[in-house]
Each structure stands twice: as structure tokens, then as C-alpha cells.
Length: 494
Ligand SMILES: *Cc1c(COP(=O)(O)O)cnc(C)c1O
Image (cartoon, rainbow, N blue to C red):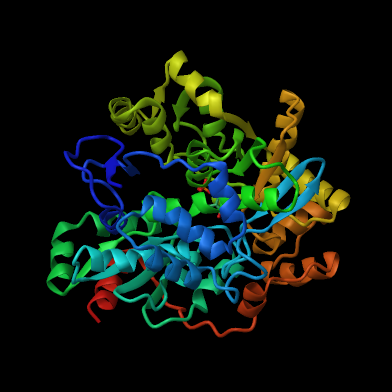
């Protein structure tokens, strides 16, 4: 299986290892497989009898054809080991009323990004060897919270790699900060930046585009790489849990083999929901994909009107991991539905004017698969509270956005299929706002929120978060933005 750029300017396809090693195509596009492998009901039936790592290896081997099944199984077993995902990587629970929840937050950092970032570094490390890359990779991350910690956990002690994370001291919660400051591993480094997320991100972008600096690092045997969600190595593990959830729903007698389900995903960068769309294209019986947004509703407008317009106000919300105005992975959807010429044209418009408009025909192709809803802050809080009261399930604010969208979709469309709602974070990851939703007030300190939420609900605090409260902070350095390059150099060439 070869990989091609969504913008089509590269003459030849590349191997999956090369796509994972480089991340972005040379024409600025994203890598996509040349074709989507199809699976039948027999395959799903077979997978239903396997463990999660075995399911993952089988599915990944359809896409990553230059990796052997044994390699993929070894990586999947390491990534999704029982001591990392407790009780299991992607369990399906019931919300009642024909709605089910795919819980993707049982990993080491309690958010769904672990599902990809636990295995991707292993695939990446193998890719370096498969591409005869002798330099060491330095993964550089600017984070507003969840990604930094998940990337640190994923890359720690992975051969051939080092990871450096910058977080804004004014832009992450105390829990998130502590999660990063207590990070273990021999190849990790974390620095706080004086400023906000934009300052950290701009600093990282400047370092990536500094070609003299790249040369200097390369002479020292190091190259820079990123861990963000446009890398195919992050997307492909996400396809696995949609197929796995369908297997479990079948295995547990919730659905018949071949029965159609709908799926609802709390969406920011469009990576997670796009993986669900690929599962549908592969042959999993998915009807509609409901794209759930918060007040940053650029995708709702896009799906309803065909206009993508990022020129709008940015709203900081209580579902911050979805506070995004440019959903990078949407480019992959355009490519699949409209082809590379149109994708290149619209992406140029987006970068020149900040907007583009689909034709009516093009829009109907999007609407054949997708429905869009957005949830405001009050609806989000009310949903957390009501779901807890009615079903005893404690959900986080991102998941609440999706549950609310799923309910409105069912009403509006008189939908009868069972609905799988994707749950992307542990309620304890956003404990202060979950408490606010349940009680109407929150403690001034979000470390106290963990214990208070635990007292209020008697739902256990996940072990990785409980541990953070007792671990020693070791990465306490805080630097000015102007010092970032020196910090990278010092760490890279150490
Ligand atoms: C990253 C994230 C999302 C958004 O996922 P995308 O793939 O960017 O659409 C939703 N919820 C949580 C908790 C996240 O961390």
C-alpha cells in the first residue's frame, strides 16, 4: 500500500514508514493511503474473538503493509498492555435509551489521545529503521494541555527518539502542569514558557522553519519531528477502536452482525471522527457520523452550509481540547470526497482568505455521511448533571458535548439505529468543570477538585491522576519565549 498527498503534487507514492517518519507531504498536503482496504462481516466476526492488541495488529496490517504482522502485534501488545489501560483500552458501556459509550480514556493520561500516542511512537521508531534514518529524532511539541502529556508518555524511552515539550505557564490547568512536571523517562524534557499557548506554538513553529538551525542539528545527528494529529501514524490506530467497538457490540448481543449503527464524536481537529469515517468506508455498518462541536462551531456551519470560515471569534470553553478554528484533518475528508485538485484549491483559499465554500453537489456528498451539532456552555453543564442523575455515569465536558448532540440528532431525525457516543476524557481530567456542572460551584484549586469530585460521586479517581498528586515535580524549569531555541539545542545535542 502506497501513500499519496491530499494535494497531489508529489509524483510518486511513498511507503507507510516514510509517511509516518515525515508526517507532512512535501507539497504541504497530508498523507492518505492510495486506496481504502475493505473488510467483510467474516473479518469482523473473526476479530470479535480476539484481544484488543490482536484486533489492532490485524487492522493496522491492512494499512501498514511494509510492517510485518509480528512487528505490529509486538507494538500493539506493548502499547495496549493491561497495566497501561485498565480495565481495557476501549470498552463500550450503556447510557440507556439505545445509546452506548465508547470509553477511550482508560490509558496513562486519562484522555483519548493515548489510544494513538501509545502506539505511534513505536511505529515511528520502526519507521526510522525501515527508512535507514541514522539520525536521532527530536519530537518537538507545544501543548495547551492534553497532547503534551500524552506525547511524553508515548515517547518516553522509545529508541531513536527524544521529546521536548513546551507548555504556556498561563494556559494549562494545575493538574495538567503537574502531569507534565512529574514525567518520568530518560529522553524527555519539559519547559514552561512565560506567556500563553500562542506564544509557545509560535516559538515551536519558528524553530521548525529555521533551516540554519535544522542544519546545525543535523550535523550533530539530530532531526526535528512533530507528534501532531496530521501524522498518519496517529490516525490509523484510531480506526481500530471503531471497528473494535462494533465487534464488542456484536459480541455482547447489543447488535446483530451487519446491523447499522450511528456514531457521534466530540470533535476538534477532525482526526477522531475522520477515523470513524474510514471505518465506515472499510465496510463497518455506520450510518451517520454526528460531528459534535462546542461554541467554536466552524464544523457545524461547514456541514450545514458548505462554508468553512475560520474568520470568527474564538471562544475559550469548558471543553478546551475542542477549542479549534482550523480542523486540519478535514483536508483528508475533502480529498476522499472531492479529489486532490479540489482539495489543493480549497486549502489555498483557506490559507489566503481564511474561508472556502463548497458547491451544492459537493455539500451533498458531505451530508450523505455527516450531521453537525454544537452545544453551548449551559447545555454542556446541564448534560453532565442530567446524565449523572439519570444513569449514574459520570462524563466529562467533551463527552457531554457529544451526548447532547446525539440526543438532538435522535429527536430531529427520528433516528432508530443504536448510537455509539465516543467518550474522550475521564471526568477527572476536567474535574473542576465537572464539579461546576454537578454542584454549580467549583473549588478555587483544581487539585482539590479531584478529591471533592470523588467525595461527591464516590467514583474512583483513575490511578494515573491519583499518582500525580503524590509524585515529585522534576521538570520545573520556566523560560522566556526567546530562550526556546537554546533550550532545544541544549537538549538535542546533550
Ligand atoms: C483532542 C481531543 C478532542 C478532539 O479530537 P480531534 O481528533 O481533534 O477531533 C476531543 N476531546 C478530548 C478530550 C481531546 O483531548
